[in-house]
Structures are given as structure tokens and as C-alpha cells.
Image (cartoon, rainbow, N blue to C red; front, side, top):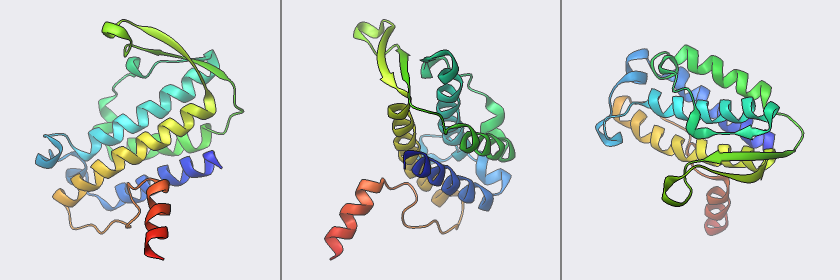
Length: 164
């Protein structure tokens, strides 16, 4: 179930990117404080990559992501990375350590987590950034995105209940 939601989220992002021109993908967006759609996509990609790469060693550190500018500049590179993510995420659950600098006084700390928990986090994080990406796409293009693009599944369920 969680892998299906993660894959569907990534697929929705790829479909949106396919509709953008290279220029639109890299265009600075005033409504995104000068960042581009590509920069938000890079951020989503790299967090998933950190998780997939950290699975093997048992430690995930999102702060140490590579910040690969090619993902932000070339939508084909981003699409390849997203495809690789959908193929790499289906792993058994296991305990992981999360290294972060969000501890007291920004001192590095290590907390326990699980792979499934981090898949859920990454999916929710991607959806959050897709909401921002929607804003950027609206600024740089006339592309019509699906109504559910960048909306959390729990919000969609709530909206459906309210519509009854």
C-alpha cells in the first residue's frame, strides 16, 4: 500500500514534468521566492535517493544529500531519477537510524526510525513540494494539472466526505 502511494505520487510528478518545456522547468518563479520547479523536483528526488541509498547501510541522512544541480536543470535527468526511485523503493521494512542536525542547538543527533516510516515521510514530503510545484507551474505555463496534484490523500478523503 505505501509503495503504491509513493509510486503514484512519483508518477504524477513525472506526468507534470513531461508537459513542461525545458525553459519552464528551470524558470525562476516569483511566487516560489525565486526558486524553479526544477529545484523543488531536485529536492524531492534527493530525499528519496538518500532513503534508498541509506537503506543498505541502515542510516539515512537527508542533510548530507548531494544537491545535484543536473536534476534541477535537466528534466530528463529528473525523470530518469524518478523512474529509478519507483524501481528501488520496494524493500522490506527494517529499523534505520536517522542522522539529523535538527537536534537541540542544531547539534547532530541520531534517532530511531523505520524504512516504512521514512517512505511515508518522503511521500508526504513529495506531495507538499508538489503543491509548491503546482504554484510554479501555474506561474510559468498554462498547463492544467489534475485537481489532486499536490494534495494529500487524507485531504482528498476529507473533501470527498464534505461533498456528500
